[in-house]
Image (cartoon, rainbow, N blue to C red; front, side, top):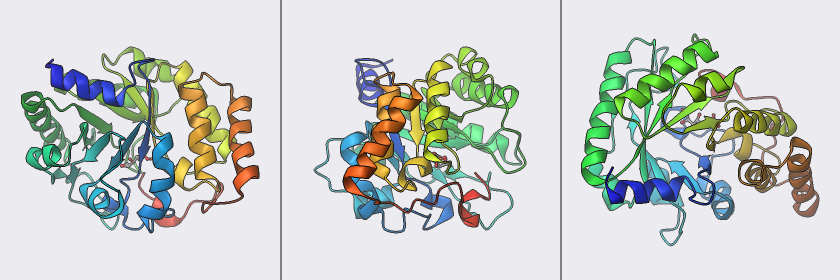
Length: 281
Ligand code: R5P
């Protein structure tokens, strides 16, 4: 691994503990104006100081994020389908390595659809991206896609995560499941947990705590933060679990304290999720 690639990886996984709180706000690349991200600048900018990394598309980066921020960027570079299609797996690489370098990306993220119609194409996307990333020193995060028909269990997620690692992915992003340790223990690269659909805040913090206990290197979380009624409260609480080893109760208190201090500042969809947001992921 080159010095540059190691250096960029250490901007994502913080050297002090090897963990990360990535804020995922890339949903619009196939969901359009997702609840909470209708105007990304309003939602995302207040969260930037609490995120170790931002995961987003180049469009949101260019249009909504000030270039003066010091937070490392992971660019979502795969895409090509939308929520209107039944099969989301027909993805290609839309953002090339030159653009990632120009935008000073610390990493590139690519979705891999194991068990879906375009499985081979998406594994090939990842392989090509890793080849280019190794050439220029940019790590690749492979994202295990979970379509509505795929079972989100340890057997499936371990299979998908391992294929990403064997293809050369430097970090795997996957979903939480029971027996999560089976997923992390059979994957030779760090795993970050995606949050999935919006849950009540305490449940989301409990899932985060369990993932960390199960060997996660942190989170790459979106809806459970930006759809909260207190997005800053939630990202602070998630940070307390990931970097501070906080219990669920202590982390929930962090969220509640922030909400009490600042009031309701986010959409706060609670456990109700809008149809478009929950249909596929
Ligand atoms: C998934 O395809 C999206 O790109 C998100 O980055 C991912 O699902 C993580 O966000 P969330 O925590 O909302 O699931």
